[in-house]
Image (cartoon, rainbow, N blue to C red; front, side):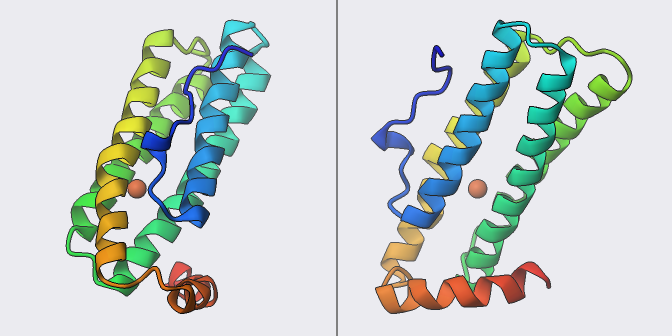
Amino acid sequence: MNTFVTWTDALSVGIDAIDAQHRVLVDLVNEMHDAMVRNYGNQVVDDILTRLAEYARIHFALEEGLMRMQGYPRLEEHKQEHLDLISRLNDLRARFDSGNTKLSMELMDLLKFWLTTHIMESDQHYARFFVESGALSSQAQRSWIFRIWDHLND
Ligand SMILES: [Fe+2]
């Protein structure tokens, strides 16, 4: 498949667990683009859109949980960016549900732009904050994994 969004080092935030999740988001956007280019049909695109929206919600909750635990000062504006993407995905979903099933390449370009810009600017910013605050020590990273689930349920 022709890769719509190419993963490069510029997209890495330097935290393996977060990079792995961003790669899943990139893969899902690529999968959706591929399904559209190949005219795989509405059901296929719809299923990918559902998976993308679900995964994005979980991933954003995880990021926000980590930011809250680390006292990240830009949490509120970062959350707003996440809400913006969720509402974009909701709009796409609504169009599909109303029978307006044609997603334009223009919308895919916007989604690509949003995702890559968000990762390269806003996510890189919190990652740098985590490095500077010592949140990336192996001890701290281990404890995140256990503590995050509690915060996800806040
Ligand atoms: Fe983010």
